[in-house]
Amino acid sequence: MTDLTKLEAELSAAVAAAPDVAALEAVRVAALGKSGSVSELLKTLGAMSPDERRERGPLINGLRDRIAGAIAARKAGLEAGELDAKLAAERVDLTLPPPPERRGRVHPTMQVQDEMIAIFAEMGFGLAEGPDIEDDFHNFTALNFPPKHPAREMHDTFWLPEDENGERKVLRTHTSPVQIRTMLQGQNDKLPSWIATSQAPPIRIVAPGRTYRSDSDATHTPMFHQMEGLVIDRAIHMGHLKWTLETFISRFFETPLVETRFRPHHFPFTEPSAEMDVRCDRSGGDVKIGQGDDWMEIVGCGMVHPNVLRNCGLDPDVWQGFAFGFGIDRLGMLKYGMPDLRDMFASDVRWLEHYGFSAFAAPNPATGLS
Ligand code: PHE
Image (cartoon, rainbow, N blue to C red):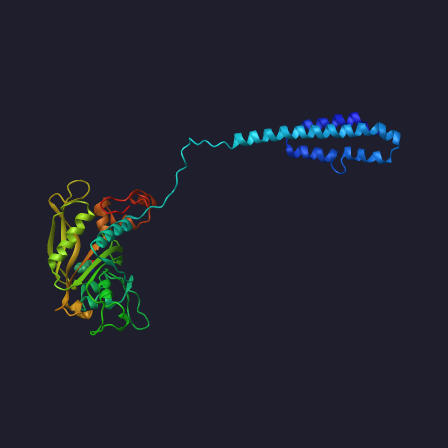
């Protein structure tokens, strides 16, 4: 006959020694589970004589109840302990500073491009675009470049290999081909055409984009960004050009009066042509716009050449216009004090973190841009 006292002592010790809820459950199964030691004892009651059962029954049932009670009590204690341990381990210190978050930055060129678009949009200019890979017609011929013009030569222009029609495309050397595309909108495949039904003037667009020239030093990179401007209307003259550029410059540099100077220049597609300089001070480390004794060239411009108008099906006796071309990266270098153009396209994350812009900055009160 099983020694109930000994069994109870063993089970009580095992319950007390169970280190966690899982171990306690194993003790419970071993004692009270289907074929546990106590359950087996209860099964023996059925085979006993009534007298024997009357004597052993209360003893075995009493043992079962005490063990079940001990297990329940131990379980409650272990669970409370485990919860306490969990709470202690998972405590969050809300006073700690949050871990630094890595956020992308807006590239200065894109920031400057957005600022420029916002200013021109306010002045009534729309946006136009053209492809980076251009044909000779749009990049040169329609813009009145003579056949042997040096800008067509290898040292300036990236030429692509001849295609199956013997044609050599170029990486556009400026955004001026977008002038042609805008004036000829809708029929580029039938060009050149002298009876083209062009996009009817008035036209007032800016065209930002990537441009390419085989050149590299502190102020030149093989890829850079330009913003073209084109205005075509009746009775347009240099005064409109001058006002537009001066107004833009003072808004862009957030200075009320920036003194400018127009120097005669030559571009095949404008007549007369000019470069506009702004007064600046280079005596300190960086260039200050609007003061000082120096001049800095900012933009090429001029009145659209009559040949260009004719090439786009516009009668120069009816329509006139002006055009200009800014270097976007150049303007960014000036406004935000970046000394070397090549750094802008070196993809150095440390440079971008320093010179880049937050995408979530408060809006600039002058431009309304962030
Ligand atoms: N396309 C010229 C350049 O790249 C700039 C320009 C644009 C000049 C429009 C006059 C008119 O230098």
